[in-house]
Length: 313
Image (cartoon, rainbow, N blue to C red):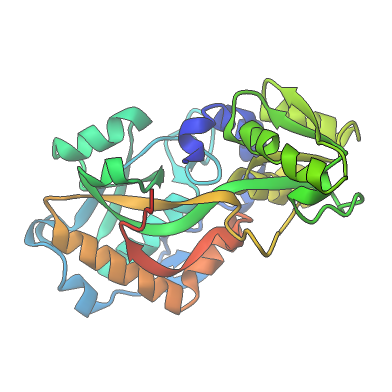
């Protein structure tokens, strides 16, 4: 299930960290003075064959209208509070896709629950907003899937408790935000802990992720469970990356109970879906995609193949 839906407080919880850290990220994902597009330190150039795949209306307009719900770190954020300049994983990826296709990906803020209806109404061509690709949404939009996103484990810098996976949380105090998928994940793992004879997880609930992180900082808990993208971003940015670490479980590279996130595309524009899928694959093949994800501390959620409508629910 999409963390975007299950974790509406995530944006607020990370806002302070975002504002402090973005100065180091500014300027990436924009056109350089020479007119070249540089994203995450990589120059992205137009592929004429991919441009030729675009629908006529997109070629004529020279842009793809993109809906996004801001802020939701690390996917979409404002560079500065009170201003409109955007940054984030989705924004950077959009700029790279646009450069590869030879058009502009023009982002506009839109409330999350209104994004798909706005595409249906023709106000936008696509949406990039950490949207879970599921069968219900596939009835009205098509998806080009670009990440696998689930729950992750955040630990203190250096991982002093040597947490490697969910089993290592058994018998220990673990922080989590109330009323979230992550709380459900910990509850569902209690039987496995009991069967292993390790004792159940001592779950400590908090109203906000930021409160859970304070408990982790102070040593009251050994770990916090939250969405993996958020965990990666916090580990990369809090105290310049010196406060926390992200646990990488090889058995769950995208996070626990990961589901695909996709670029939602209007069903009226199948040629655009095809062009974006091929452009995304090109960014995967040349290494640009992983560099974008690395910039935001979430390389492990990147896909290795650009798929369409990959949901299995």
